[in-house]
Amino acid sequence: MSNRSTITEFLLLAFADTRELQLLHFALFLGIYLAALLGNGLILSAVACHHRLHTPMYFFLLNLALLDLGCISTTLPKAMANALWDTRAISYQGCAAQVFFFVLLFGAEYYLLTIMAYDRYVAICKPLHYGSLLGSRACAQMAAAAWGSGFLNAVLHTANTFSLPFCQGNAVDQFFCEIPQILKLSCSESWLREIVLLVVTLCLAFTCFVFISFSYVQILRAVLRMPSSQGRHKAFSTCLPHLAVVSLFVSTVLFAYLKPPSISSLSQDLVVTVLYSVVPPAVNPLIYSIRNKDLKDAVKKLFPYMLLKHP
Image (cartoon, rainbow, N blue to C red; front, side):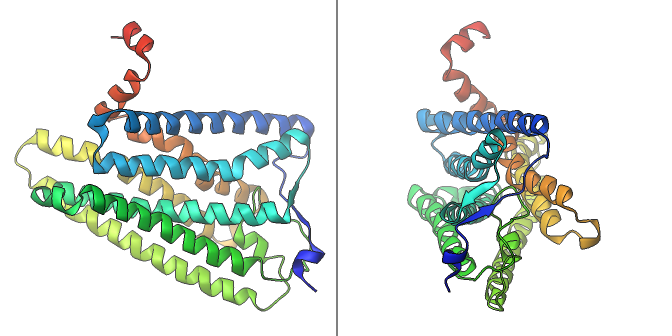
């Protein structure tokens, strides 16, 4: 019997049991979602509309903003709707779509952060070769490779996960359809295939982490050799935002998936998942703009009245 014929919907984990707390969570996550839409939307508009920002670094930042928008829009609106309408249901097709788009966008973002580390490495360690190594065609190919890798990863994981028969109920212990939680519902030994696929994905992710770490070791060595303090300050100001975003991304994911089972509970798992899936898309625009004068100036030019009011 097909697993699709036995399960037509899944039940997601509710944020709270009482109606008042559900509405409070709805308001909180609505605020976070609107902040993410505003911040990433401003970055997209600023980079697209200002020729001065048409450089490799800002091209990759534009892609990061797109991925962040997609990532948070995949999970949060459904959770907010469930909290508002006091329901937990998500259709089988909706759950599969959530898994597909989340894996695609989340994976592509990690690959893109690796590419952005390479961009900073070339800019600081090999500045004379920057134009040849990171031309417009090369940047487009690298961005396409990040999106394409995320797409391939999503196809494999989604197809493998939803080919399994489910006989452990339909309650997913998370506020969105997350692969490890869905695997708990499987009654087939074939879930081992998905575990193998997850291990391969983790190995690729570890390779990217090693590349990012190596890039920043080389960057640090190059910066410390710079004779002028102004040059060191400028180099650090372009690298620190990316390093902060990578650190937030990696630390929350590692804590979510590698924390000891002894300290695990439904409420803790829920908080940790919010930290790695919801917080970064909302915070990344702030991290990138707080020390970036060019980006802040470009954002201000989007609001001429604000510029006149605050010269």
